[in-house]
Image (cartoon, rainbow, N blue to C red; front, top):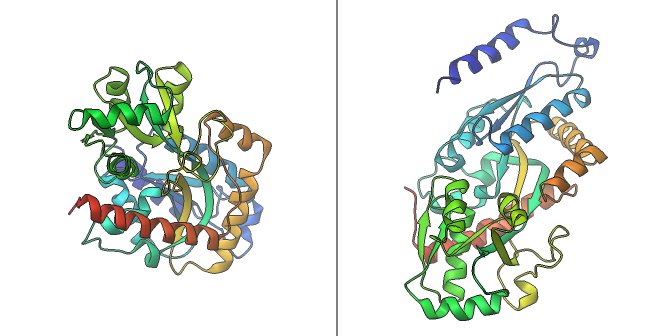
Length: 329
């Protein structure tokens, strides 16, 4: 909260300065953009996602007439606060949001959600994609999914699984594994990824379903073991880990993703310009290498492809959440 006021003052100050002194000659031309562009994120200041967004947004400046970018952190409520911030902004092309797959869950777990992600927001460009992996402590002797399921199904009622919070992608996928393999494990929600993973390494938690971006540090250290990943094909970063699909288990196609969104009603030419800038920067060797370092995949999805993915996942998660019976309101 202490940073909120300075951030607002900074934004106000930028607006007051207008084009004088801040902008290059291109700003003197009419059209978009001719003032700072705000990127909203649900990540807290200093989080890995926030730091990467900040770096990426700075890289966009040369592609956007030299317009400065401002990161607006709206952590809390699983991302709802960030969504509401975008909802309250003008649809003028000067506010965007970095969203994630939780957007496809909110319409189901929040029965009184004051907005509709499908109606009130429009996709701009894809940012990154990571499979969700079934991880267990490396201290366990099981090396394959079949071996682990054979053991876990005999421990009915004795095991637990971790997630970074109720209603998260990790929670819903963990429930699906629990149900599909008849494990009878108890869900343990944590306030974030780090404490959940630390308890897993310590053996206090038996499994989790989490994106490989978050699992990567402990996987590379050898503290965790992946038994299977979601998606239609094996991850190029984990060529020895099979997908659930190739092991004969359906319904595990959904992955973790991030993407840029704008408020519905934003002029189409602006959305096209922003999408082109984001895709151009993402395609550079520099950002290809940066993504590879954190096991994040990317390709330039069209806005229609993003919308179709979100629609399909929203419908799938709705069915799963109805089975869980968990609601956040």
